[in-house]
Image 1 (cartoon, helix red, strand yellow):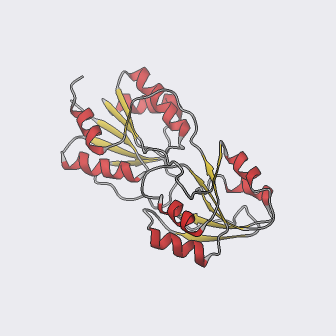
Image 2: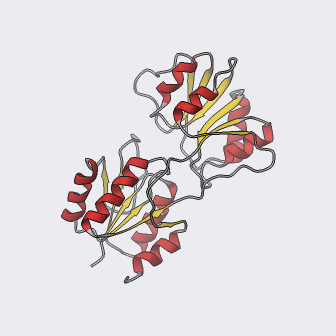
Image 3: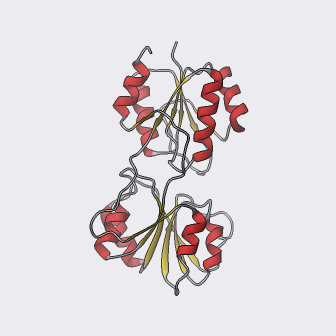
Length: 245
């Protein structure tokens, strides 16, 4: 009998959870626990890490999981690598539900970098108002470029002091709109954006807004992952779940 583990945290993961629940398939939805108020799901939900490959392997065996769908953020490289290793050890089927990466178009002013450290180095310039749309995990790295005022777009309001001396916060949860992102960039007088190449549609409006306003973007490209089976549509994942092979 099929039993699915969906590793979530993305808009696509939530859409898949709804599709799986609608079909009445037995499944568990898992959040990493990095957001204080995760979106409720129509499936039994667990929150928190597994404890590496060994912990994930034990969970898969205990819950008799037969299929794993990795629908985590494109930058969650560690959990995605752990998923592949655990699936191989347990002999279960695994697929990644991924977003196509963003690509620059005419009018974009992107500076592509390979890491957070390179993004920090790219800000070695006179003071600007910089939108950091990278989540909260790597904010401290930007203290090395303390000449800037940083505007932080976060899902949750910080519960402790920020690691940046000159910063303000905007609390919001995607999907975002072009109208909203234009207003954000104009009202906050943003001069440069730093973001991750997350792909998809839920956070793409800031790219269009930046293009319209002529703003440069420091784009952090995705980390490399081991080869894996990837699908990009919910319907394709459902078909994969239905496949007997």
